[in-house]
Image (cartoon, rainbow over all chains, first blue to last red; front, side):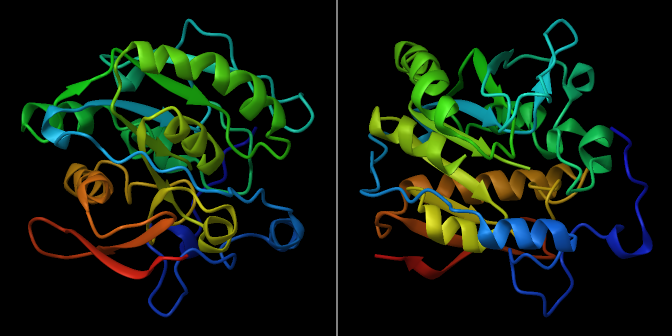
Length: 180
Length: 96
């Protein structure tokens, strides 16, 4: 997938003043049409698990949907219709400069993540927050999935139910989920 | 990611998801979401900007201890120019 060069209009990383936060205006027309028509799944009822102890005493897992893999892992399969629902475990002590971003979407600029994987997979930042005493501990494994999955059924009904009990066994208290 | 958050939350793991697209967040309704004012591809703001990246992460973690939030909680991250840039403002906040 070719990486688009930053244009004059997208060299800044924040949206310009006056732009509604998080609206569809940043996308090309074909994606705006798709996203407006997409039937988002509604979570109802919304589950709620209050944190039982301070963040500074809690164990955190990072879950990324940037399609991150290590150099030893099988890449995500971008030919799967609806999106590859598989999952990768990334060691939390990983050297982020060795990670490979394979997100399949051409709807956004990949340049930033490839310059600095911490932008979407902040392993270095989390280690800094651990050292600063903000977070109690970091789970030994983080999770990586592919984003822009238009058919999330297999991910939610099969992949996550297989992976999530491991996090319970790991005694994870907090999951921090970061899309792109 | 919101659907994944809900699955983990239902197992007793407290979750916070960073979000970039408000219309989708309001429709899907994750338990706790931090809306960030960045383009897709830049969820923590900017590459090689550790201070801003940490500020976003701190703001996200703060949602976990905010006793005033109820599900679904959608909170906006506001970028500041000062040293510790993370600040949250609850807008529509609790949607229910």
